[in-house]
Length: 245
Image (cartoon, rainbow, N blue to C red; front, side, top):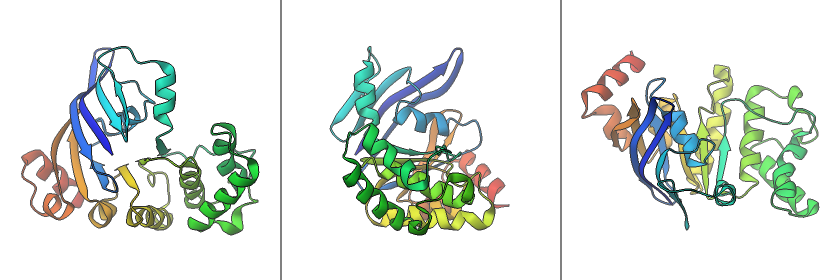
């Protein structure tokens, strides 16, 4: 579903991603872990071209962008529709209700009729456990509820791949579980997902593969049981000892 070849990203003289190559099979959940500043979020933002890679090739489903040469803006916009992105901040429209937030993309971007989009939006809000909040505004919701609206909104665009950037980092600890449950449900339904997170429990329970990044490169990757219990690389061991201490 996803193939990345020799992905680089530089900001002026700062070389943030240094040749990332990765394949993600359809229906798999890949969790990316690593210290702050390791390039995890930049990597995720390059996958849906919120950051334009300096070089490299990214393929999702049957679409490919080759950043070793000039890429047209229209190709980027089409490519971006293949991914749904859930951010640390909820990024909901404050003047729209929960239902209107989920409707906005399909109606405005995909030109789906409002009646069809409304039916789909209602189904998605039911899926994330917010059917009773459809008429509420974001300020009336808890952080966990707002993040679940964000997930429903991303799913409304019918992406091939879901990308999550620290989706629980802004939440109070007691609200983390409700968001992780929705993500686990998506994983069990076969949604292809790439998740940047500090939630090691989620990585252990839901990931098919865990990737440890540091200083812009993939240091180690493997099945959760293997990587967490028997890491091969010394840098991985240091990181896991630190966070599990």
